Image (spheres, rainbow, N blue to C red):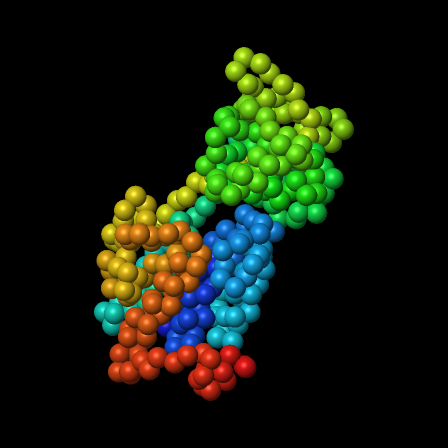
Length: 337
């Protein structure tokens, strides 16, 4: 059985969810496919409780709050979500529509495809030590999904990027935190680095130069982390280990769709955010164009312009009359205002 819709959105992260809203304003229906088991993308999977500070009008919002709000914003347009699966194959029909087949043997037909898949399928880079699988998600956490679990605990955070420093700064409020990196130089935002150094100076966190040499389970439900610094080795006993070594991004089947790629990113124009293949669009971190900023708010802008071009494919015989949500009674009705 083939389910029909106007647009298939691949990726249910913040940008994909906002695309549902922008398309819905134009009477364009959506089905959404994501390989995770819930909407929200990286925001919900990797940092649901991590504060985000650069969403317009929101002084501070967590990844999960942002996801919940975007889901509520999209709800009036009745999107259909297909989770825990990824797109395996796309086929162009003679009527200029697409058949999309997923890893769960789902078949969808649509006039347009919108790729909002972040940077593709992502998995955290893991500690390069064997036989740690039994500790993953228990004592070794590659994502913080429940901050209260770490309250009053002794934590070792490893890494020098944004996630490592952001969580160091955030968890210092509730836990005994040590940050470890192989050098005292960081790849994080300058403001995050300044906050971390201030916390260290005030003795609210500890900083340790070194790298993980080995990990052992202790009898008292703790981890013993053997740290190597030059020729010296130090034993640290902690409740939880949080390694933030970044993510491995994989385009997966998207790489075989005949799109114009640039270092595993999809090239688009900046008028419609259309790819080199007509009626396939790419928005958010997956795309590439001159001046691109990998920000959620940039993806929101891209979604709005993409929707305008999708209207032309979905309603070729109609004129798109631009309307503001503040003044259109028709849009107020759609949004249940």
